[in-house]
Amino acid sequence: MNWENPAAAQTASRAAAVGHRPGQPVVRAAGWREPPSPPGHFLIGNAPELKSDVLGFIVQAHRDYGDVIRLRFPFVRAYLAAHPDDIRHILQDNHDNYTKNNIDYRLLKGGLGDGLLTSDGPYWLRQRRLIQPMFRRERIAQFGVLMAQAARHLADDWEGHARRGEPFDVAAEMTRVTLAIVARALFSVEIAQDAAVISQSLTTMNESMAQAGFAALLPFLPTRTNRRIRAAKRALDRVIYRIIAQRRAHPGHCDDLLSLLLFARDPQTGKTLSDRQVRDEVATFLLAGHETTANALAWTWYLLGCNPDAEDRLHAELAEVLGGRAPCVADLPRLRYTAMVIDESMRLYPPAWAFSRSNLEDDEIGGYRIKRGSLIYISQYVTHRHPAFWEDPGRFDPERFTPERVAVRPKYAYFPFAGGPRACIGSQFALTEAALILATLAQRYRLRLAPGHRVEMQPLITLRPRHGVKVVAHPLR
Ligand code: HEM
Image (spheres, helix red, strand yellow):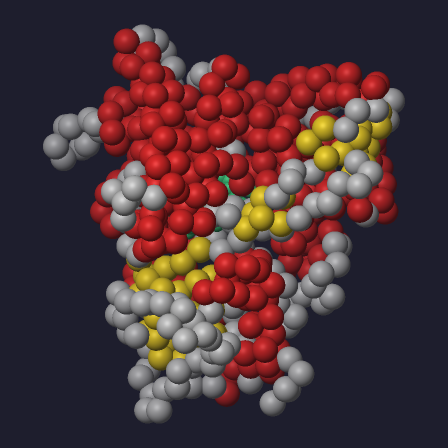
């Protein structure tokens, strides 16, 4: 046993461990053990550590206790699974045994309702099949035109800041542009007027739900947090129901997601979705469709600002491939380093940093018995730093994502978009958008952190920079 690094030792001894290989049925061996667990406080378990520094705590617990850990939560049997084989088992090979019907998703439903992200079972499957065509390759290429255009406008907007040498928050700018893009692409609306209300409502829900804990599961309780969530939801609903009413009144010839949702008929019953069901999908896509991509880009600017060598390579690629003209979707296959920078940024700062599943039946994970109804956490933040798969994991190094190195790594060592049937439906949308925005802006500006500004992680439902990322833009031409 490697006592220095139990996570690596467990990985090395996996072949010898009791247990499954991907795709094989679970064999119940005698003497299954409980996974090790960091010590917890009386009654409240690990709650104080998870509240004060969740990221530091789970990374350290993985280093100290290995690939499957029991987390001590009040009232719930919770685990963290960090090995790529186990993540593959949960998300892909044995996904039928795992559900989103648990406290985490019930909490999310408080704001998002029953949209594609939070629903489960046959309703989820029907909605996924309905919506999937919106994210085909040809559609993404069409969206790419408006993504590139929005990025060019943003680059023009920054000229004033750059001329005056004035610091600005690039995280807020990434939120503004990604929200405008998703609203235009999926709902054909100009969101500028409502952007502040939408952003504020979604931020409030994101913060409050991440902090509310059990109180948010009882939304009728008159706590301050519950009142904030309700007010944010009301403000968001006003905007969304107005967008729905306008489209019902003037359907036009839009073939966007909104029309798809409003006018699609169930093949069996012939019924359309109710306004409430449409509202839940619109809220889901407004949130999931911009917040994560905005965070990925904000962290990318931060990392480039701290790593001038990588930034120089990026600029060299942009100059060579584009020769000074603005990028479009057709350029993306040749912007390899640009994509590698984004991949590496999402390794270190995964916008979706953890999520959970619950098992319907007993299962075996990494040689341990996991009783049905447990809460199993999977964390990109932890696995993307797994020392058995990432050398010097804290270092920013886009070279990790050359095709040769990706080919020899297990698939679930890197999974910013999750995987299996519940993988992110918008992954290609996000990667196209991020590459076009990064290429367009990096071609014109070098961003440097504003003096004295401290960048800090804020792990809510998504991983945000707590005080934004304040930068000064220096024009390149
Ligand atoms: C860098 C950007 C993004 C990241 C890192 C990301 C990550 C993820 C992850 C990890 C999941 C699985 C969550 C879970 O199991 O609870 C997910 C699901 C989802 N994402 Fe994304 N996402 C991104 C961008 C987008 C975009 C641009 C859209 C829409 C335009 C989108 C829409 C969704 C939806 C609707 C789901 C639920 C899918 C289902 O369960 O069928 N995401 N995303």
